[in-house]
Amino acid sequence: MLVTSLPTHSPRGAMNKHIRTVCKLPTPLNATISQPEFLVDNEMLGGLIDVGVFTLAVRTGMAKRSGHPVKETLFALLLWPLLGLRSIHTFCGMGTKQMFPGGKDALYDFLNRENVNWRACQSSAALRAARLHGLLGSKSALVADDTVKTRRGKKMEGVSGHFDHLQRRTVRGEQVLQLGLAGEKGFLPVDAQIYISSSRPQGLLRPFRDGRSHAARRFREAAQTKIEMLCAMLRRAVKQGFSVTYFLADSWFMAKEVVRTALDCGLTPVLRLKKGNLKFRIDGQGPGSEELTVGEIYARIDKRSLRKLPGLGRKAAHVLAVLDLAREGEAPRLHIVQLLFVRGLEPEKGKKSWACFLCSDIGLAPEDVLEAYALRWGIEVYFKEVKQHLGLLKEQTASFASHIASIHLTALRYILLLHSALKGGGVSFGEARDHVTGQMRTLTFASLLWALFKALIHGALDTLREELGEKTLARVAEVIDSAVEAFLEKALQLTSQDLEEDEIAIPA
Image (cartoon, one colour):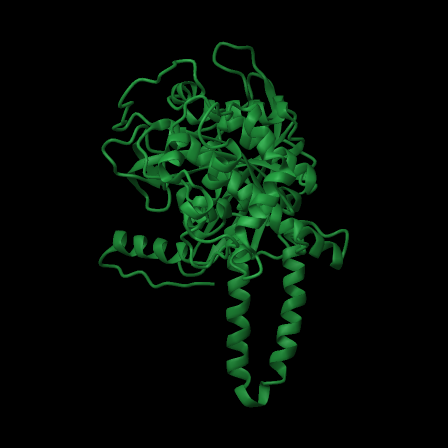
């Protein structure tokens, strides 16, 4: 685990330095495609054929009457951002002219097309890849999150001001709301949309050629709230055939409408709760029942009832509560939910911090709730991969149509490369778990597998006891234990920074 010391005299500069350092860390997919035997152009072409993207492209409006063929153009667009990476190996060469005679002008022209249904192409490819690799099922989830790509161009359509969670300040750029499929074998991007906020938005430089085109409809959609976008994404994904059990999101997306939509789609929402003003009833469902916030509910919990969670230095307790999901003016729609409170001690601060998760399945054990929520980590890895290696919104274009094309092309690159990595026969997380035991859950597996590794490591260290001494061996073991526990806490968003963000109000 990387540990950095932040100077006290310049907190913002230190935070930015820390973010830059973390962004340089390797990512799983990049580690795979950087291998000398992995020829990315060959693998990409094989993935296009296996997943049937060429057929999907024609069905979603990518046909051309003249110029360069659609297949060649799409292949060049997908491979384009990867050609400049020295760590990526190719078979045909490193220049666009070598693989695509049309050059950059033809590629930019294709990016700016307004009549291509990029969303349908990406989501269909994701569904086919999910079925090919068995990513759908009872242990899979739809996951939502957003990311901000800083872009300061004055003539870039769709750019606006957004609050960056990492930098904790408002930046100018494009915010992408992402919905994905997470499972034990990996993460697949399913849908995405650019969100234009009301803070200094940059409108269109010129009107669309056709107000009924896909690009025009997506621009109108970009003015919706993120909650409205997310609910529409969930409905589309379930209707298309993404059959999963859970829907996961962090506290920035906790809203009654999201819970309601997830339940209507047959999903089990597992959501992180902010310590805000949302009210629950805990002593009955009648009109006279007392309504309390999660903070008030936690204050009433007998702390002696908290029990230790396996593999984490934290304790938990769950409470059954009633949440009214009715919209304004509707009759009450009461739903019983489980509130899971997780508490830990921060020795450096001398205080006990806690987090709260909402789950609509009241029979789910705390370990199962956290196991499901831990799948959300896949979307964080996805954002890191696509920003660092796969060209998310890096094209030198100003049109909103090209930006929509960019977010979906990036997703297609990820889908095809993940398909190649899984097809290559690497042991997935779920398969590794099954080698140990068929009964371990994901989170518990991580903890128990670590216990196994720890025993092996400690056994190896014992052979150096005479050379290093008891004190040094104990210190090495302590550092290793701390690093792994910190990783598990990060996956569940239980670090001190994550808990502090629960207290921060979402900026308008």
